[in-house]
Image (cartoon, rainbow, N blue to C red):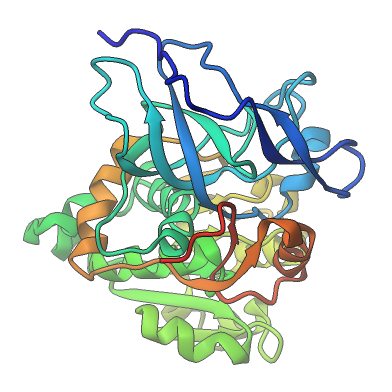
Length: 351
């Protein structure tokens, strides 16, 4: 059983930290705060190399008060790549280990020089990735994995590890993902293709179509030139999908109702799909229609890591910003133009 972490004596007492002073504003400041102190038996102190802004993240404290404590130190960014500085005895982690994780948004994030992660959130960093690439993986990969293989029931993750029977079963499934070239969407495309889905339909702009095909998409829909309802109507029987993963909210979430077949599954990471149901598909019955918030599970990252190191899947990095430019990094994310993940370099190192 792990015992609470004790810190080495040579650490700084204060660290560079990005804060969001007002939960009703996206304004960020770069300041200094005290070195975080372990307070939970599973706390691991990590020196942060890289992290990533999340879409809509600066409004989470406002929008999800049941998830984000009101007294949370408002440090943004929950993706992490870094190096263990101090870990509980018996935790399986040692000083100097390179790790990656998604840290729960209920606790301070990773846009600071040192942060605290739980042993249950951490996994060893994939050896084949540099720091920027490793930070780009956890939140997006975990979200895609849980959407496809936990929230949806139609696909079997055993196919990813060589189970041919599972792969044959997956081969009868059509999977569609919106925002297919984004952080989460790019992972949905890769994992669905790797699992042997019979079709992987990527919904994205024309400018991102070729990138989606390289990731494994078998069909690409330009949502600007060909909105989903119109595309589906051209060949309803041939184009409706068994599993639809919605990574984009608003009108696009509503359009997903036209793409999912009767008895299919509609899984959203952006809001409740039932609330977005259009009136003209009111009689469509689904096996599953759900919104979920990803769980920060290191055990799933440990399943994804060998796939990364074998070159079967990979994170997509759009750009890398310095910590002082984190507002510009968030701006790029929110504009929706990024192809993959925007990364923030915290410690100034490059690898």
